Length: 193
Image 1 (spheres, helix red, strand yellow):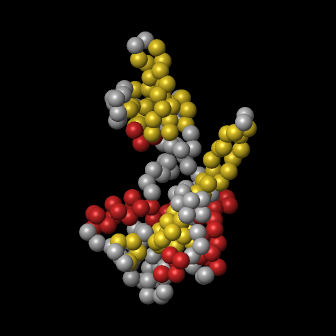
Image 2 (cartoon, helix red, strand yellow):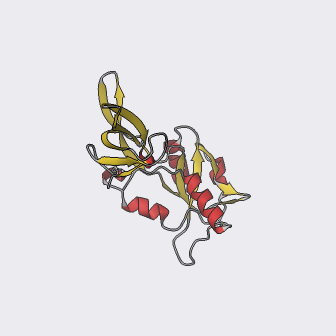
Image 3 (tube, one colour):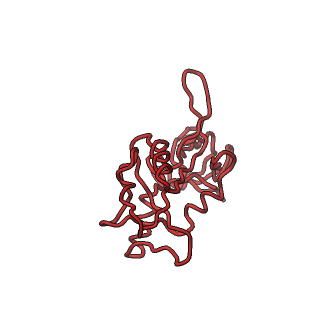
């Protein structure tokens, strides 16, 4: 799996705009999943309170390295900071989600919340490893040859020197007879032919 760069709100807006209407779940399928925007760093609190009210909640986590004062430690962090997924039956009272501690609001168009595309949450759940953590694997590793596809260095080929947990990549380029390190987003690169 490559680094996930979209937020749940961008996934919803893309699918709503493409179809021109709200995504409807398949008849007979399990309940659809919706996106709740949480307060800053409120994913854990929102999840706990929603689960206490009987809702099914999913908050995918990934491991990231924190560096501070010459120390490194791995922590679990939300894959989509500020968002959690809630399974809802819209024929039941669902508006209480917006009043739950830690939740700002359900993402909606007009008065109705927008359902995620069918299978989106299930795909994330299948990629979970031990203790509910999703392993993010970069599209290319250190030392790989890559082509830059956007920005001022477009079409140049370089070598991946470093990857970080935020999806940024440091690439070494040969410019004017010397090596220059450039940091950029992972999405701006492809594997060199």
